[in-house]
Structures are given as C-alpha cells and as structure tokens.
Amino acid sequence: MDCKRAENLVSAYINKDMSLNELKEFIAHVKKCSSCYDELQTYYTVYFAMEHLENGESNPSYNMNNVLLEDLKHRERYVRRVKIQRMVLAVSFALLVLLSLFALWYM
Image (tube, rainbow, N blue to C red; front, side, top):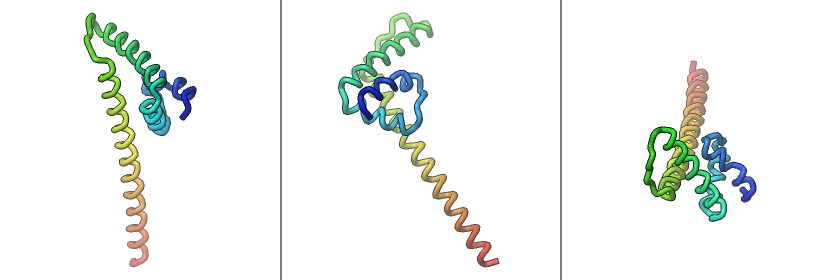
C-alpha cells in the first residue's frame, strides 16, 4: 500500500469501515510509515476526543499514542482471528465433503 492510499483510508479505519484485506494492508503500512502513522494519530486523537466529549467526559486524560497502539494491536488480532475462522470453516467443509464422499462410496 502506498501513502496516498493509506491517507485515503484513515477515515475508514477510524469508522471501522474497511475490508479485512484493506485493514491488514493499512495496519502493515502505518506500522512502517511514520508519516502515515502520524496522520492516523492526529485524526484518531480528534475522533477519540470528540467521542468522549459527546459521552460527557469533560477532561479525558489518555496517552493517545498508547490508545492508538492498543487499537492497532486489537485490530491485528481481529484480522488474524477472522482469517483463522475462515480457514477452520474451509477445512471443516472439506472434511465434511470427504466424509460424505466416503460414506457414499461404501453404501
């Protein structure tokens, strides 16, 4: 992913409106590109602050760098979990097909 694409996806990241592959590529990019990470951090901080003000928190004191890093880790785990779930589903389906064929063969 290039910087222009990553910058265009910052809003989608914040709004959790990305495909799994986009999310994986975006996270990989912002982890290695300090410029894109800084842009994400700026927008994420503004969004986070506005969200907490709307919820009645008048003085939130958070280390926004840590909050963003935790969010990135959480979403990386989400990507891995979904990929594992898809793999388990595919293997289960393949086993079911094989068992069905095996049962049909011996009937």
